[in-house]
Length: 452
Ligand code: SF4
Image (cartoon, rainbow, N blue to C red; front, side, top):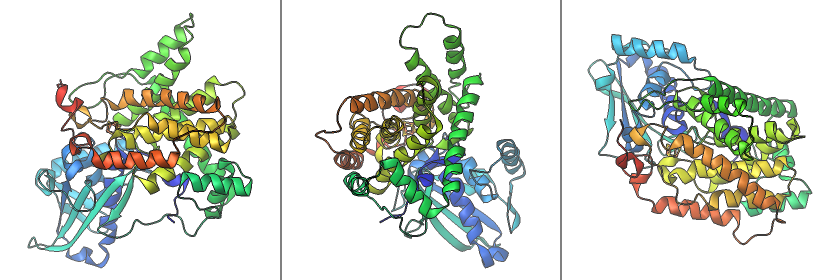
């Protein structure tokens, strides 16, 4: 059974995309690190991007991510200002400084290839890294895949597990999770907490949950204050700060202010993401606004909310994310947007029920509702940018998650469609979906909306 932690699902990274920015940066860094003894023979590097990475890589900053990864940067520690300078230097000097090797000639317009005609066998988000000697001969070549949510794999190797050993309550299905919780007389958050404490101390679990929540709050705060337009040819104006001001100044409460605030929180995060800012991948960057928005709803708008509720939220939401990762995919390039915003909605709905101390059955029910009404959701970003429809879509996903949680909390947890059935349906729908709706910007809004 795969050993996946909630901290594999929630990671602090940079925008705009977990699969097209975070994953490629990690892959480029992994390739540079793996050269080892071959470094002395390397005189050049060539990178080829395939499939969805070729089609939407420019809009998703895959090209910049790969260059920075080759320079040794990682998404969780990168300094965005220094990264800008590094990228400018690479483009002006046509040289790249690879750790352990030193400066190599690298002309991004020739050595970074977007291959539109071919797809590598394992996943549409494929990358090939070639290390070349002074005569241009390949001394090492590795394929990497960015398989969604910032996870990467090399060639046909199995996915590397970040967690060592089986936790006390291993689960790979919704039904299994419910049974384990019932047999052990634990709530779902308690069960997940015990699993996490198997891989690290309880103090570290608490600290990392607090870090995730703190990073989400910082992201929302920045997004609610920052004005201007987003990067890209469309010059999309940022809206979150304006919406926040209007809500603060308004004295007539329409009764729907809560929904306006949830919209503002989600849009704030996804505007930060679109601008390449620091976000929590949850479970992806394109869908990074849903969970923080619903958590802010709980934290700021629900009387008597507390930090323990926030922890229950993250643990339960993480468990649901693990189920999608194991049984389907959290990659928009494989599943369409149902695999990103749909999964985030399902996770957030479950998390909110847990924060409200709902039962395990109600948590599972909320997760199921959160996905059932996102089935078939396509990915068709205009201009290949993670902006339209992505930013508003997170607001819609957050509102839908709150509604799913409420529907579940008004029931007793009994329902006809199980979470496992809906996850399986999402997977099948994703497989059946045309590739033009899977992060290629070849269909839907991407071809019907002019870019400027
Ligand atoms: S449409 Fe959805 S899946 Fe596609 S890039 Fe936007 S958020 Fe990601």
